[in-house]
Length: 63
Image (cartoon, rainbow, N blue to C red; front, side, top):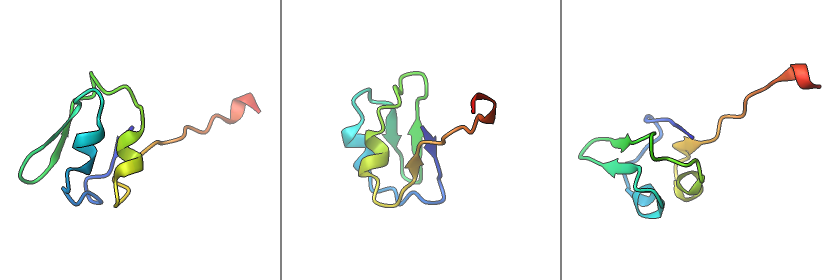
């Protein structure tokens, strides 16, 4: 899961849907604990500003 801090509005919606508790909201940023994140994607679904997203790797060697 990737996170774009410039898109984040610090609403905290992602905090409540994270099943692993990997996200923490402070006064001016979201802290992500990557060791516990399981890339479920719930944060990217709930985020109204699209701050969380999955980056798809392009591997043309398999075509």
